[in-house]
Amino acid sequence: MSVDFEEAELAPRPEHPIRWHAASIQPGRSAIAALHLSRQGFRAYVPCRESTVRSGRRMVRRVSPFFPGYIFVSFDVARTRWRAVNGTTGVRSLIMQGEKPAPVPRGLVEGMIVLTGADGLLDLSGGLSAGDRVRLLAGPFADLLGTLDRLDAGGRCRVLIEIMNGVVPVIMERKDLVSAA
Image (cartoon, rainbow, N blue to C red; front, top):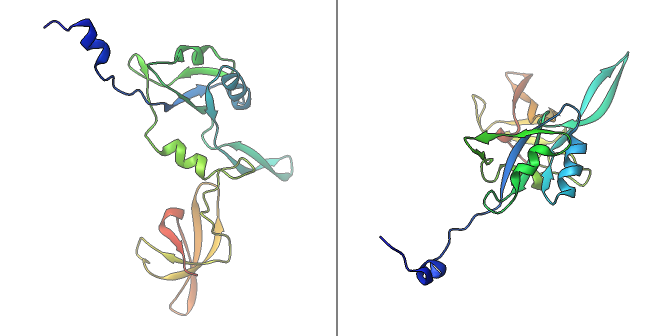
């Protein structure tokens, strides 16, 4: 089947949206990789969290990547020279799917960016803090009220529930809680 040249020019072209892709980075080089990627015109994102590590005999709070060893890069595969990402300082290689970079599921990185605070840290608390009254949404204690005791950077919570004349601690995911206030 032959296509007339004028018809081919007027035919609608499929959109090639900009998508997020994951790249493997060298250990401890996330800041360098993000800097060099942004200098090349790429949009880079490294979700970070605050963690406590032991240094000698004391505990120190440090900012560390939420996904150690990886960075997210935004580009259009069809219109961008994406192979330049592999040659960027601090980057090992893009995560590939055959001959092309594998896109990250839609909404994943965008959702993390929305949850990133002004301090640059990923906040999975959803506005909850220790001492808040919460309602459990899932599990054997669904629909019970409790008091949020602890919330870690990984999204796991410890909730204190009053059952049988006592207080029982329950460990669960943040997504299974809502504010009861």
